[in-house]
Image (spheres, rainbow, N blue to C red):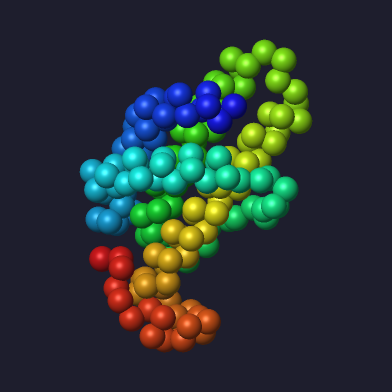
Length: 153
């Protein structure tokens, strides 16, 4: 299934970009004209991780936590998730005899890879955000210096 999904990479990228451009940017950093330059790198990482991933090794789902909602990764990764899910569905429909369990496992792997990337990118960006309430920054695990750089204009 990974090979069939990889064969749709060009279409996934086009759909991801189209979905990204539908979003209203939450900040100047979330401008689609800026974010589209990350698509090829992101797809490379996703396909590399999918090739190495075991769904049984990473059972936890990730719900992005961004108190201010200005993190540019939110819309970027949501658009990518939609594009990749659509491509996976196309692959599954085009694969006769695919078992329900195999479909579920493929979706679980995709979701877990995307959750892993989302956790890393969203949390990293939020760690330097000064748009978060001051009290929240002071109680963060890394302390007040954890938010020393302003990431959101």
